[in-house]
Image 1 (cartoon, rainbow, N blue to C red):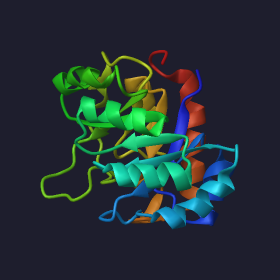
Image 2: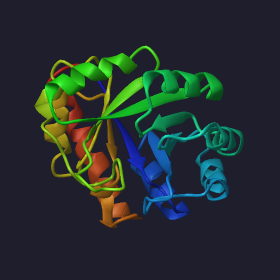
Image 3: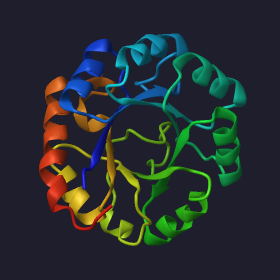
Image 4: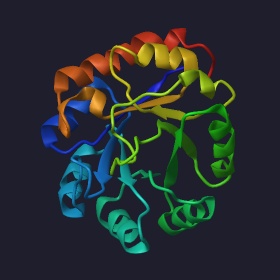
Length: 219
């Protein structure tokens, strides 16, 4: 089964084209002012418009209020909303209903019990994205370049997405151990925070394509 790729934190037309040309199925736009990958809604409009049908667009938000959700939906018109904050299942359901879009819910984990607890989102989110817990004091809920023990995802209900410290060197092993149906990369294809590199993007997507037939379990 094909493992899909999401290049997250896309900020420029050149990197957008690099991600699509490499074969990424998803491109992510971050709407979080504390992130070095942050975009304003007007900036994202042009990028999203350039995607067309070549990939699916993902708007990444952190504990958004209704106004931000409405502005993104009306102007950027993403295919997916990715909720990357402390949203409760009730809030996820409310946002999904309001937006009328596919919703991914990012859940930070470090232990198997947290993976099991994430199932409470399964009734309201279209896909759960397991990510590394942010280190103490970090202002960013994701994109910190840290991984976790992928083996704890053994009992996770498929299909799910995986993020956290992935790069071209470790993504094959991450797929093999976890059985993820989608892998999400940001800092792992950057030369500096927020500065993505087309060569690293190509290497990452190639590594995923090479690894997918050998993954440990069907997604």
